[in-house]
Amino acid sequence: MSFRRIRILALLPCLAVAAMASAGEPVAQVRVAFDRNGITSTQVEGMADLTTGRKVTADDPVRVASISKLVTTIGVMRLVEAGKLDLDADISTYLGWTLRHPKFPDTPITLRLLLSHRSSLTDAAGYYATPLGQPLKGILDDPNAWDDAHAPGTHFRYTNLNFPLVAMAMENVTGERFDLLMRRLVLEPLKLDACFNWESCDAATATRAVVLYRDGAPVRDENRAGKPACAVVTEEGADCDLARWKAGENGALFSPQGGLRISANGLAKIGRLFLGNGEVDGVRLLSSASVDAMTAPQWTFDGGNGVTHEEDTGGGQPRAFFCRYGLAVQTLATAHDGCGDDLFGDGVARVGHSGDAYALRSGLWMDRTHGTGVAYFATDAGASPPGEQSVFTRIEERLARGIAQPEDGQARPEQ
Image (tube, rainbow, N blue to C red; front, side):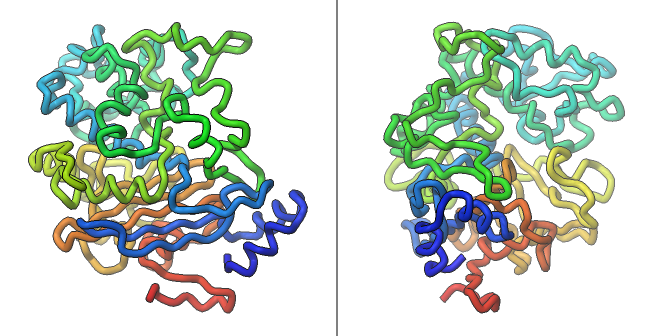
């Protein structure tokens, strides 16, 4: 989307704007490149809000989808370093009830297995719509919540439900609500104007939200009047009184798996934390050992030992999307014929995470060896065609590699 087109969009009535937005190009695109010392380049194009004609900036908060898992795990590792959590302890110790695969009752499920998607849980029983005041534990009683064919620790299956359970463990060992705990452990120390599901952000931040669109229609975060009236799911007719929150009851309330609202510049700071081995701008948040533990692959694709795509949004790809996965950290460019994860097309083993939800595509990727990285997102990108060199979409390849798409349609590398 060119800047000339942006000016035109700002003048059009809402219906005409929506029609143009659904023509195949993202509504907004933001790309921030960085190194250990700071941001090295910024590209922004498009609209944060089509209705008002507000242009997107690299400081506008956006729901970054599954990159949230990586940030949640930074909070987990802080609690591990504090001695409150153990990656290899039975998660039942922290939940206050026994979590076991019904077919494999003698196999403990640990935080390490949850964070690396090797718990044998699935998303087939649902999780995200569990309302305030209802225990998430009931989801685990549904047989559909379990992969009957594989014992915990033996198979990779990307499962969002893992992270509400992680959040419940975090709440139980601290007594703090997940979103407030993440603010204390991660967001405030790094001076990030960010939050999970808006409740702990202020109204001014919420009004700068990047609206998520699908085919030109808004689907999330039209926050022109401030924060949403209710940040969590409630039962029909029930109030949204967060005083009813109980530690460890429902870890899905604040969406640890995908509900982080953060800007591209904020994501870049998270990336620089990894490039700095746990330290950024003079703030030591994690030990280098914790960063190494997060980024080291816990699972590597061997041709048949995992479900290599997210079942909610992926599938049908000729090659694997997930090929190496650590503690909520992907590793790219896996040397296996069945892998299509070389997003950058250069064979470099970058670490980070992708995001895909509500027609948004996002990514945070770091080359720890060379000390460089990139954070990006595109909204209304659900119609982006397949990538040319990987199983990522074309818009993700363009944003990852810094490829501009001018009006003549001839892609050119960023200068």
